[in-house]
Image 1 (cartoon, rainbow, N blue to C red):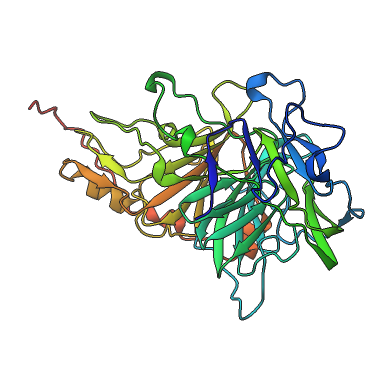
Image 2: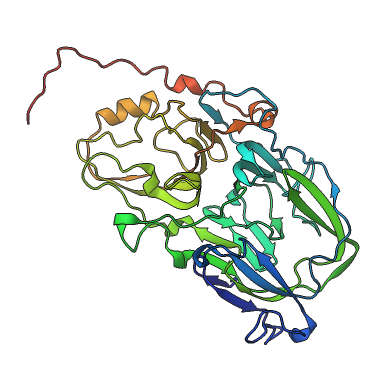
Length: 432
């Protein structure tokens, strides 16, 4: 069983048990570090950020990360930040499950299997987001995050994490990592260019509810002192492009570390669901796991929202999600099961995008069934996990997303075609 430390944004410290006492006592940068290590600070925020938002960690490593050959531009494949390569499409969009390459046909690792579906903004100004799929079948070998199919073993400078479907992991800016897979693997990635993810404010909910800080897990220190003759390839995503450099030692050579800027993971089964217990709907923001805030109060660059198993008990209420036009963009994916508003067509490993002010809502079958259903307490989304990346950005879809992937469901609009008018101008209120 892999070890972790718990807590969201906590000040943590860890040292590999093979080197007890590797953390300096009482200071960050002694003249000589224990075991002859190098001290290196990784800053996730400006030095002068207020203390509650100041993020940094100190790493004590065998060699510093500055020791490498020059970076050179490499192919980005289907990873892009070009939001103007095709014309905008305001239609409701849905994708069938994205194809995973067969290992018997060609080997594809995590980096080669990255495909940008949509996004907006600019990495240079550090304001925007990108939404990507990864589809791969081979581990990264000496080469340098929401699985839908297949377990991930993620090695980072801070230690190792095992991430399974129904778990999420966050790798923060500047952290080096590699991904091992154990077969055909697929998942979703939300990349935020500037802000860090936070737990949402709870307001009148109080001190407890939604995602509990103690359920977020950080890896413990683990290092390897290894060199390979062919060298390690370090891949750096910089200003929307990929660059590669070589070094002859493992980047995972951190013997000890302390700080509050770490990778972490979270199991969605631990989410404490808040829901309506009388009538009508609470808005889906009540299901927010993490948020990346913009500079406008209450407006997110990106919210990560889930639709987990729960009880539905609302009286005299149409219980599925309401029909909606939103000033935010809504990208949805499905990890497992069937989404309650569209039980057919929206499949695990697929996706949908309802852009800003694009109408959306339950399909015709869902509306008819739930308009006449007996309103008794029932389990909703049992065995299902759907999620949404909601953003204040008006996201553009890439050429890969609209054309190259060949998974765009061009019949999506037809799920609403059977909706019919129930209007009765002679309707009279019947009092019960």
